[in-house]
Image (cartoon, rainbow, N blue to C red; front, side):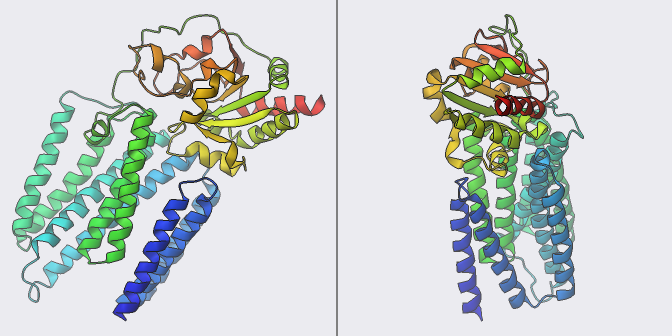
Length: 465
């Protein structure tokens, strides 16, 4: 039986690895997700067969979990996907915390048979609780910011780094005493203290992060959830949980590093809080001039005469649910012998890959999705850039205004295109709270209105002419 269990776990791990690899490409991401889900199903079934658990509760859990999953898949809008991911990260961390807690409680109940807890098990129990607690409470704060239930602005106070440092030091001190004698009554008290500290640290380390930096936070919390699961795997001596947690943790850290690079931030800045807490103010250099509004007819003639058009989507596209009509407009442009592509900034939207998922849902061809580093070198030859709901990720202040809070952040350099069409409801600034110099450029035309309705009007123009 042991051989069968280990062999099944190896198969599951292989499915996880290949599934994770396939998630790296939009063309294979769906199959990769299905492959990973199959691996997890195999792992769960084999574990339950081996453990001899009470199947009444297992079946109830499967039914409740499946109902929640189906409801989320059907009802949750694409605009709400980031906060749903934050919830999933949080509950993953909470599951690891509860698992470690249950194992520790069981150890205390069985002290007559197992009088001493191995030091290593005590350490990984502490890590599972600490990381799981931070992941849960931090993810709840991220959920609140993304859903607008709490302010999206960075919440900072004097001595915040010292407070976070003191909380972490207290956690490590409590852990040292706990690991020295986990079986005592005082050990249980310290365990509860560690749980409370971890939940508090998750809040204090996440509230200083502004809404604009949520893509990095989500990928980091995703990594935390994996690390917590990995530690929990050591607690219960489950090899596959260790492997799965390590895969999630490592991939999350890699993604976090990619996100940091895309925003010109350091990983240490994320890990030690204060991320995104700079005051959003700029000298306004380059953000002066005359705004040139354009009508639907004006934009139609500009696009109709273009040989190449690059769409640059942002969170406003998701809010307007305009991805399907954008794809339709792209198809009409292609019939007009126009080269069409979609430039994707790594942190456009509210979570990593948000725009890729959005466009994939609308069946935009994968080969038309172009990354920032690939589109920028040829931006001078682009006839028209159509910016839909993007703001900070196309703001030239990141390149030429040293007083700007986004200075140094790599952007999609749309301002270098021959003509720029910006679809926005108003002149309101983006997450960084600063004016966008692009809107005042000599080659920019502002196409005001709801993105979906504006593009539908353009589609009608192309069909009627």
